[in-house]
Image 1 (cartoon, rainbow, N blue to C red):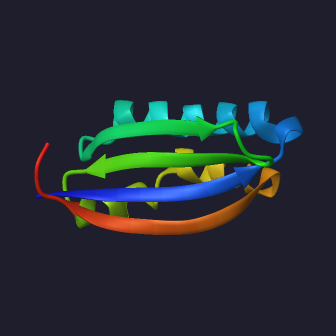
Image 2 (tube, rainbow, N blue to C red):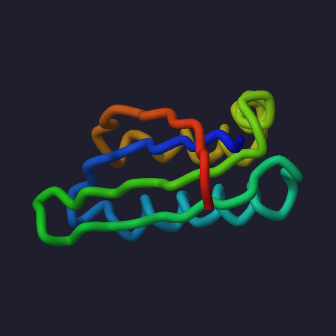
Length: 97
């Protein structure tokens, strides 16, 4: 059973490009360097102001996610959090693809 993490953010239009660049860098590094990171998608709803951004992250298990929390690329992404308002982070067990 995989471990799914759904963080959410609200980002002002003027900060969206910079925020998404930081998010893409984190997602790409996660997929390239973390064997336990199985999927990392970024979705944006531009129908709201500020924009709503959601990450869909899938890890092999909770331990793989815990390792993700210690990576340099996540630390670099955290430096961009001043560009947004963080929403809730939801956690799920993936039971079917």
